[in-house]
Image (cartoon, rainbow, N blue to C red; front, side, top):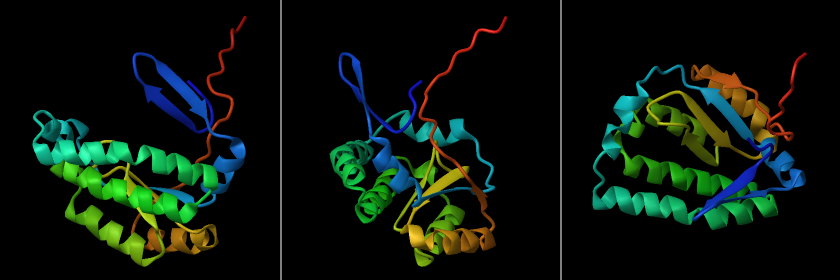
Length: 170
């Protein structure tokens, strides 16, 4: 386990590149995490990945192509670009598996965008659970209040920069 924000590259081995803390701290001010209070069954959602069609494969390849622009946006601290990439990845994720979204999540997305979210994405398998939004930091508090009115539960989070810490007790 690594601390902070990291880029993992998988080839015949795994390489890890850590982003400098000065970049991640600025971005954290723009990220907001919410629980949708929507119950879902992850195994059911992933059924759509058992057999991939050409549309799904295309969407997954497009998601993969967002890695380099994402790295550039993080290194520049460009919240607008990062938000647009996050939003693009959400639209591609929906194309990759129809079980990822629901009408209710669509409503939450529209509400978030109307209240200042630049980017939006459901985390994990989809279908509910957690969402992450990115907006200009000066809109953060007003945005959180608006999303709570939509019935979402705000969760504070922060990265741990130390990584795995093993302690041997006597």
